[in-house]
Length: 391
Image (cartoon, rainbow, N blue to C red; front, side, top):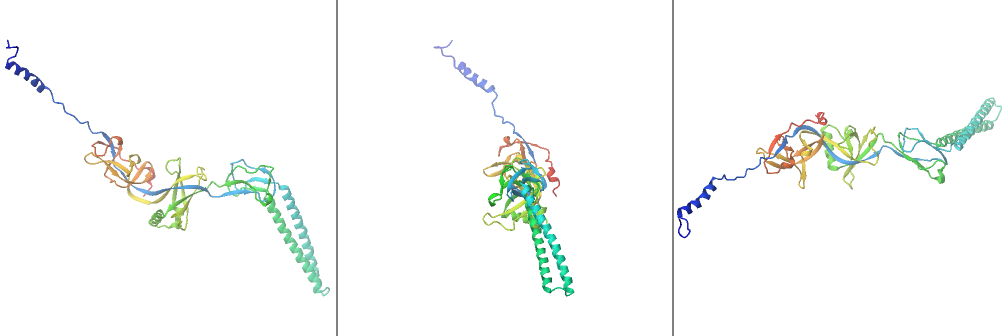
């Protein structure tokens, strides 16, 4: 029994100690960090690579000609379908042949008459020459006969020239394809008068598509690099026909069309500091069309023991291109790199990377620079088919 309801001191101490004992029996909570995220790493592929520079160019036809009426007359016929592919010598238009055929026949008849007159004049001269030897006629008679013969020869020469002109004009009644190519839509309808007023009426345009040119420009430093590459191959700009040029359309992947360098201008344009160049392509598939813009790849020689990584592993920011690399302590590092040629999904790294580095190729979103990761080795990179022939 307590005095004035106050518990004894021993009971109060025991009550105070009980929560402390219970608290001491609980296990202390501690934070356990999650394991480092897994990423896939891969060492660069070391291989010789054909170096290139890339630029843009435009496709131009080897030949492009406006088909015009060179004589006056009614357009008789159109002998092709608009946009058709034609062969050299195919008749594309016919312009009122009868008048010009009649002129040709007239010229031929006049030529035949002139030839007959010459025969007659030659015979008269021969007789006068024989009589002169016998002193039967005078020298004046012989001179007169010779003048008539020479005049008859001149008349025949003139008639022959007239026949040739008539034949040429008659040939102009048929407008033929000057080369294999594709013809544009007709610009003049059948039955319309063409070639009037001294003007040559444009009938259509024919464009040669096989082979075809790609024109592009190279900066002066790149030209010097090309010269250096040619010197390494013991060649000069005179051997440009041996330099392969590859192009790709804007909608294509890579550079599937391969041709040869056809021309390099002898001088640099002082206003732009560039050198004009041209490549020629067979274009059997007709995929390259005049007027198109294309991507152009020009070889610059072989780079020995180049380092290649998957193109998807390369990131970019305001500082340029970079790679994520895992060091010996499994810490992610961001390396600024300089990239070069792309080959079948692999990209050449020109600087900022060594052959022993471990590049993050998968799990890039989990690789944070300065943080640790759990690297998993990927299978070694395979040599692309495009590099197997590079030696």
